[in-house]
Length: 203
Ligand code: ZN
Image (cartoon, rainbow, N blue to C red):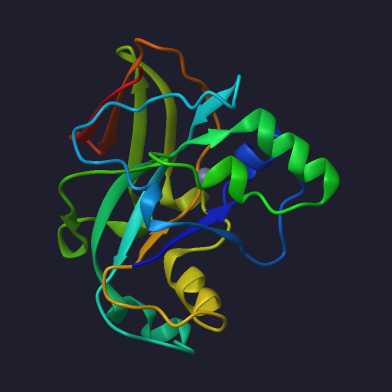
């Protein structure tokens, strides 16, 4: 399986990092080893002084597809999960300034948290879906799919022009504003609407 992540998909988040809003989806990958073993704590890697959380809705692909038309993209996923795209922001800043790929800042072990459970999209109002992240009990990020610059079906159509999508592939769909640093001892809890999707302890 592969993990594809969309960057700068929420205007307010692009702005908080000083980025322009993109004209087409920006994407990058994480290796499968980035998946954090379910229920395990997140260990801050030694190479970074500023690792940040990014809560994101995650789409699980359930059909093989290439050159998927946007109008058919909805047939390629049923399950929606919630995850964290952990980012070594200091490293990302370095590589961005040099015009180098982001993977070192994005793809390290444990950097892809994914909820144990997935929700059936039929039971959700996908076009108007709220999700959020609490840090130590306090809400730090909240987003709604209406704020996405590129919607899920557009993202799938776009990515599938370049990569064949396979069953089990995960697409992290971008983070809303409010990203911030984690410190040892922090507890992160993710929610879709009122449903708690995950809890991660930071070490
Ligand atoms: Zn992200």
